[in-house]
Amino acid sequence: MAEALNSAALRKAQSLISSGDVVREDDSWSESAPTTEQQNDFIAEHGWEEYALWHLGIDETKSEQTKARFSFPYGDFSRVHRSAIIAIESRAGQYDHADIEDAAKKLLAQVDKD
Image (cartoon, rainbow, N blue to C red; front, side, top):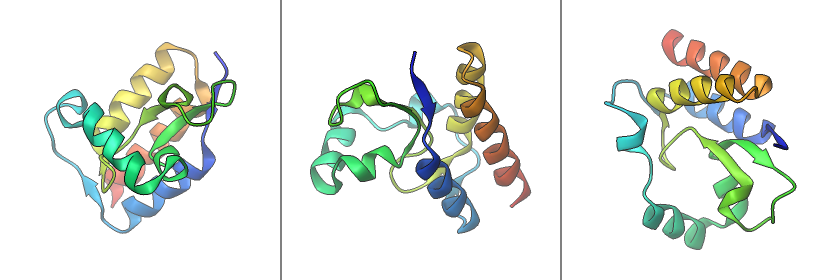
């Protein structure tokens, strides 16, 4: 896999956490994650560049305007979800994406500190 850390998305997540735009307690990310319809609506309204900023992973070998290019979503297009960060840390570690796993650890520490 050619997945790399999306540094711009990391900066956005850090900024959102600093601003208090965080869901600290929710059941599971799979229940809170945006649906396909919500993702499509967001892309239609805000474009691919903004969609990319909600994903810590990017695969530049994939076509620019496809969802397959982006992975490891951390929020619902308005707030960071703690459960998403936990899921990212686990999945990134499982698939040896050390830079994404490290970024998730830092985000989780920021969420738990703020």
